[in-house]
Length: 512
Image (cartoon, rainbow, N blue to C red):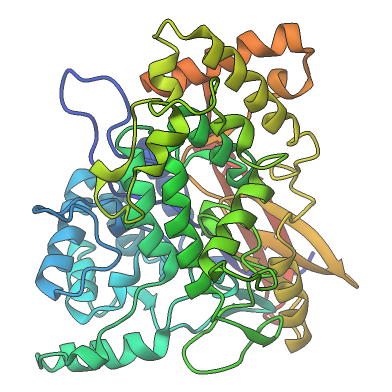
């Protein structure tokens, strides 16, 4: 091997943000990253490397922090974007103050003389705002002699013959309109008021998190952890709370908004801002890092709105046979039945009190109506069994073809390696002729669906379904959580070629 000039370490999707449980309380708080100490140890391991050749660079490829996990005071606890620069900067300070050991580790890396590069993702769009950038640099104690860069304008980052970007550009739900963001922050940089016509429109996925995911997460902390979302989360939610059926109406509307984002080619935006691929590729029920159903609209039918048609597609794609088995009444025609109660729920789900929880499985499991329990659990098992062919955790398969197609298209620019994050699923896949697509995965927690339920016979699986659901209801997620921290290491020679690109599991600082 030629002498190495540089070594580059890439991590992504750290999702630092959200409160920890209060002292004396069990549970997870509002976190999806509960492993900051391990993350800090990884950064310190990179920092400990010599400053002579090969030079060392750490890249955080998007979603360093999670502004969407930060609650705001007032009636709207969750917002998809914080346009007020002072409030956004305060959120940045709060996040860093909650996990100071990690940000201190980044400071040590810079002070050692290594390079730190941070790319903006879709959960930390506020990093593009001038005041927030200044706050981050202050937290990291950045000065003129430090090698630090923050990429926040939609550009990809090139290292040798590797192209690195977060990947939300190819996810219709989570594409960032960078043109609008540039106009918005241009005015902010001059402390000018921003006219309404220049407001920054947050991605559909961010609106989804604020209006749908976070309110559900307050009751069910698994909502943004369970993989795969489309096949597992929708049936579980409908089983726990049939009233959540109405939430899918909002999902459908957001899918329509996302469907406006298209590419002329797999990686070529069709109009300004970095506009995402059409929804037949990237994008999902919860959007890329939150799931993946096709939002392509079916052909219009008389007397049904596009939202109705999209809702039908959500239900039909998520649940074998549609949602009927979850929502059908034991006794038809009963004015107090589940279906009758559901029909009374308004279609506006922006407020939590519009969600019916009166007949959810959470209540049924502790009620005397065993007929309803017995009816719903087998249907739930059937939905879970549809996951038998799921390959989300297979590192050699990209289950969303949109990312693979984008990587293939981008490699035409002479890149040997295309590196994304965003999906939370680590990958290394040869796309053609010695060119590779890699995904750096996540340092957040995941829930892999219990295989005993999928593969066991009914007599064994049904009790396991009930055990799984009981734990989800009570918030006892620990038995089902998996933590799979990964990073990518690039070895670069003196001719600025990547001679090796490895997807690595983090097993401790001594192995970095």
